[in-house]
Length: 302
Length: 176
Image (cartoon, rainbow over all chains, first blue to last red; front, top):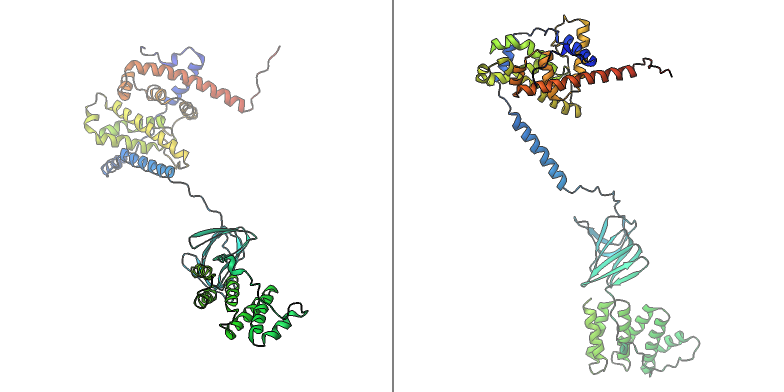
């Protein structure tokens, strides 16, 4: 394209109007410049200069780095506010809490009163309990740890095993060993003068104060009757008395076995082990000694 | 170099203000143009037209500053203080209004068309000097100028229509 004609010669109305407008603006004379500003230009030029490309490169790299980090970093998920669980220990309980938050319950009763999103860990001499969003009660006695779950579920770990106890369930740990059937069999040869008597317990107590075979039989029968009545302590007392009075009596193997079985049921494992050892020593020829030994060994592992 | 400053500073300041827009500091832009010249004295002093060379720098400085200003405005950093007017205070009312209107229309043109229109129609540079300043063939200058004039006229007409509509002027009635 050759040189254009001056715009003011445009024939088109719009262009002519535009040309006139521009010409009017072009006629404006520039404002004079303060010539002393030249010194400022020289001074500014002499100052150390930032290389614009480096600044842009740095800014670009920084932005890219930040973007990369933001893209690769998993966005932190704001955890919902977790209310701490409320733990209530009985006055007699012995417990401590470590820096890791684990509650060590040595004895007594501890309950978690409020289900919380925070994990609760309780260590007892017998097991460890772990629960989230659960209400439960744990009680440590010499016989073991009793766990009663009221809400949610609690995982119990002990002796290499794991149990999940759900709401409404109760678990005593360690679990009592199964008692061999021969040890629970009641002797049929035991006779008593109190059979058929109305106040049988009174009759047996009276007979037990006597001597000889009738007293041995009465003490044994008294223990059985008390146990069947739910008076376990009285039953154990009767059998213990029998053993102390008639350690070599005719019924001492039956009395020992009755004690062993009941102590095991009552989770008084240490006492049960002692009774089992007594049976093994005193009744070595008894055909049930093998079952007693097996039970003792399982008791000793608890 | 000082002689060049004395000869062209006023004209260049107005030119760079027209290129960049009068919302930017023309004094600062002018300083930047001459700072480039001070860093490259051989280039400017040996150029066929030192004036064209300075305009070439002014075009680049203005374009760069316009982009920066756009970014700054986007992030809300655009702070315009009291700026010195590069136009003579002795201008008439008509010239002042025309200048505002021209700037308004120029802001709607592309950079390339804006540059040639400002350099030729407002600053009065001949085609050869514009070609040297922009480092483009002379024919390209005329082509760009041709389209720049068309676009300018069209944009001016469009603005007039928009302003007429929004100013509450009565619309033309049709008579059937």
